[in-house]
Image (cartoon, rainbow, N blue to C red; front, side, top):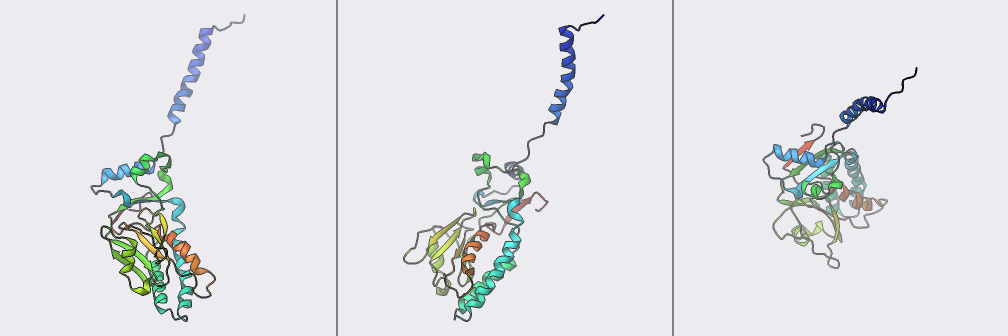
Length: 259
């Protein structure tokens, strides 16, 4: 005699089978991965410092590992420009480029920043661009400094910032040899944004400056037979300077214990 189970029994058996599976599935659901905004919120809870968000930064993992090679390459590429300037009667330029090279060699590649906005207010307003914390090497903020840094043809100088300071005023305080022959400058903002601005009499553009900005005067187009290295420096050095943190008194937090 074959016994046919009732519909109620089948439903009960099916329920007993599915209940554990549902419980397992619920337990296996991963927790949301932490994002940079979560790290900022945790940082704010642990510090009494006021964060100047215009001088906040973060370094993404995909940016970090290439910085040391970029620094070394730039220092090496300046050598033939220095050698080319000397026999051409450009001793001031040779001395200035030597200071560029020495400055690059003396400052470690890290800590650094990935150019762009990574501050908490911006991330809150642009949540789709809030990166996973696992993709961030470090983050932090700097006290807004009292200077603007200028990489000019005579070397590297820091000009004291004051309200209303603009690019023309910053350059006017430098020796004449520091700007001779330069027609354009690249402005790097505290957020790492780059803007090319005219600085000659015929193309000058009004450009206000904020503390912690960096300025690089582009090298003149003809610096001897150097195989176009001057053009490479004009392209690569501003990109590297955009990775520098916007100050000296900085709080840095890292996902690898770099604090």
